[in-house]
Image (tube, rainbow, N blue to C red):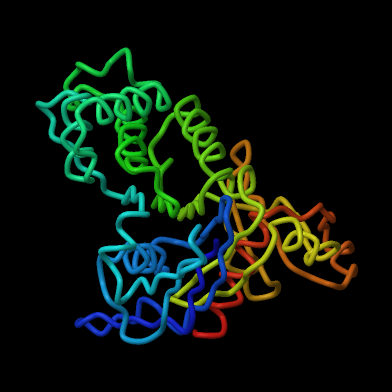
Length: 302
């Protein structure tokens, strides 16, 4: 089974072009969608999740186990039976326990038999490590616990397409690791789209990915392939606190950060003459790829 997205575009009433001719093919497994805030990731996720219609384009899911395909735009009700969705802003009822709310949501999902519903709810609470706190009001859950409850509700009815939008933002390292391990397990049986601006999440989990910026897909492929494309082109230098703007006028600065209190920049160059300027060659990372693609897109549209 795969998800095929072709020539998808969406412009909102305020004139913002959120999606600009997006085409992607996404296979079973974990697929990373990287991009900065406002890049169009959430707009794409909402469109796939049948929550909004694009201005143009198509989305096809299949073939399913019976050999048929689904048109996401015209067969939304059928798609929702196969869909699990954890949006970026997932709200909960604070005065209701996880078990009670999950049971209610399972009924809404069409799991009518009480015994089957209880089995499904218990299984998901165990899977998300929430069974021991199933009676506790959701308002008392930590951020990571709420995210795990969000995944539990997204997994009701055994979805074949799972969408998670910025799932690890705000989680502490331990909660993040538990959450990513759970996503990795889910990717063995379904298409799981992980939309995020956190490069590390994609590097650790995904065998296929895309980078989106200003509504356009600027890279699609394997993370390691993307990194190999920059071999020998990334250079690092520690600079003075007031020198950044000067370096930006002289070099292709793709990132800058403070390390132990000092500014450090990464630049792109296919010429080793920068050695004479104090730069050191470094092995590229997926983060370098990400910033390079964003810089390229921003420069083209400036």
